Structure formats: structure tokens, C-alpha cells
Length: 344
Image (cartoon, one colour):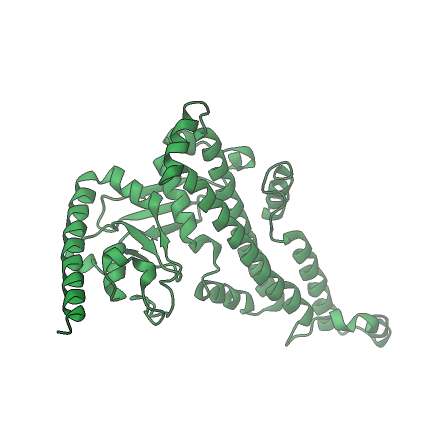
């Protein structure tokens, strides 16, 4: 079955669910634009006669010549940018809401425990997680497919360049830290509840998440199909040289790079007890050197819980180290404040 049919089936299946009103890629409509564009190019290549050209003169603004395609540029790159932004925003907000219920804090934790005495929401949360994974992967693949078709029709690399731009601007859906968090959520739940495909994904289009924390390079893998897999490194690039392979108390910066909390704070020249988000605006990502990526850093609670569960001894050792360092930094900070107040 072609992807267009699979995608249409997916959209029909979502009509009665809570995702029905959210943004989706207009894959079918964009394919029609490409089909008309391909026809225009074929007629131009065949050298249409003057009468045909005159008949088509009224639609000259929609025609695609060899050097540019105003219609496609407007329909694809402007519209896809908006659709991708809407999809990413909806996905992140829904995942945050879901994970706040799974790993609550403060008063919400007690309310959640009381609720569990009367209602078992675990299956509902797992099902919602499935829907969100299906939602983001289907739309990401739709974008990938339509951009490849764009390049094929126009004999260009504009679609490939657009994907590169999405990656540089952190709007690539499958690079979202919230997708990693959702994968950790799936792995933290009962695997028997996660691995079974549902709905139209019984055709094998969506598989599952897996995680290997025992190898030399800890990694989480999301298999969309037998040929499409994404690996997410769970190694902190800062403490790796010190034989601390796996992330601890991880944070994702706005640029998408993952770090241990202590490492991120050290890179931004702030104390651990102050937090990653207290970094100055001019602080740069240690990997890509992008400025201003600390203010909206995401605390990866589910990923931390996954590492805590699967690497208990390692997690406890890192916890002791972080607490020791935090006490040391707190002592230095208050001593400096005391000396400053005395004018020394």
C-alpha cells in the first residue's frame, strides 16, 4: 500500500479521536499541486503550440518553469513551515500534559495517588501515548515524502535544503526531546502494553521503542518501520571523557542536545542549585555553540526515571556525586556572599 493511502486511512481513523482537530500535513492537496506542476513542465518540454499556450495564458501565474515555481514555493515551503510548527507545538503541549500526570510532583502527586484508588488511568495514558507517537511519526514521514516528491518533480534539491533548514531551526519533528521523553515513558510502562501495535499500525508501520544502556554508546531507538529507524544518543558529551557514559538528571536544551544537569550548569557557569534555566542569555550550547538555548531547557523526567530503573547502581553513584558537588558549590557561594557583604 502506498504511503498516500496509508496516510488517508490514518486521518480517517483519527476523526473520532481527540487528535482530529489538531494540525496535520495536507499531503493529498500538496500532491495535487505537484501533479499539476509536473503536467505543466511536461507540456513545456514537449513544446506546446501557440494555441495551447494561449489557452493556458490565464493560468500562467500557476505554471512552473524550469528555474522557479512560485506556486510550489508558496504551497510547500510557506505552508509546510506553518504546519510543522503547529504540529510540533501541539505535540509538545500534549506530551507535557501526559507526562505531568505520569510523574507528578508536589500536591499533584497526592491528588494522583488518591485518584488511583478509584480509577486506573494507566491504560488510558498508554493509549494516549500511542496516539501521540503515531501522530508525530505519520506527519514527519508525510513531510519527508512530499519533499522528496518536490525534488523529483522539479529536479532540484530545494526539498532537501528545506529539511536541513528544519533541522537547523529545531523544527524537525523526530528530533524533538519530547519524543525521547515519550519513548522513555513507553519503556517505563509495562512492555506488554507498549509493543502491541494498534489500529492501522498492525501493518507494521510503527514498531516500538527500545533502549540499550549496557553498550559503550547508550542509545534509545525508535523503529518506525523495518527500514526507518532513529537512534537517540543517551551519552552526555561533556562528562563522556571522564568515563561517565550515560546521562544523569538529563536536560535537553532548545537546540535539542542532551546534557547532565551538572554538566549543563558547569558549561553555563551557574551553580547546580541555581538550575540550568538560570544561565545567562549569552551562554552557548557546548556542542553547537548556539546562543540562548538554556532559558527553555526541558528536564527529562521520564528519561531520568528510565535510567534510574535500569541502571540503579550507576544512578545512585551519580546522585551521591551530584549532591556532594552541590554542597561544595553551596558552601563556596555563601562564603563568597558573606565576604562580599563584609566588603572583603
